[in-house]
Length: 189
Image (cartoon, rainbow, N blue to C red; front, side, top):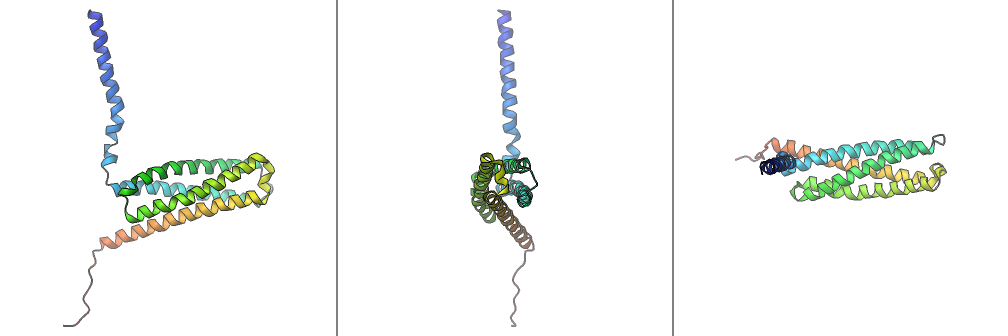
C-alpha cells in the first residue's frame, strides 16, 4: 500500500510538472497577446518586409545568372532552393498577417492585401523555373527559363517596393500626427 501511494504521489507530481511545462509557453506568450494589435501587426509586417527584401536580392542574383552561359545548373538550383525557402516562410507569415488583418491599421491592411498577388506570382514562376530545370538541366540556358526568372524578380521587386512605400507612408503619417498641428487662421478681423 505504501508503495502504491508513492507511485500515485509521483504520478501526481509528474502530472503537475507536465502541466506547468506545457502551459508555460502559453503563459509566456501573453505578453505578445497583450501587445497592442497594430503594434503586433507592425512587427510581423516588418519581419515580412525584411524577408521580401532578402527574396528580392536572391531573385536579382538568380536573374544575373540567366545571360551567363558559363554557370552550372547547380548554381541555378541552389538559388531556386533559397527562393523557395523565402516563399515558404513568407507564405506562412502572410497567413498569420491575414488572420491579424481585422486588428491592423488601414495602411497595414493595404500592405497585407497587396502582398498575396505578388507572392502567389513569385511562387507560380518559381515552380515553373524549378520544373524546367527538373525536365532538362540545359533549360537554364534558354528563354522560357530566363522569362520565368525575370518574372520572379519583377514580382519580388514589386512586392518589396509596395511594402517599402506603405511603410514610408505609415511612418510619415505617424510623424505628422505627432506634430499636433492645428490650422492657422489667415483672416484679418
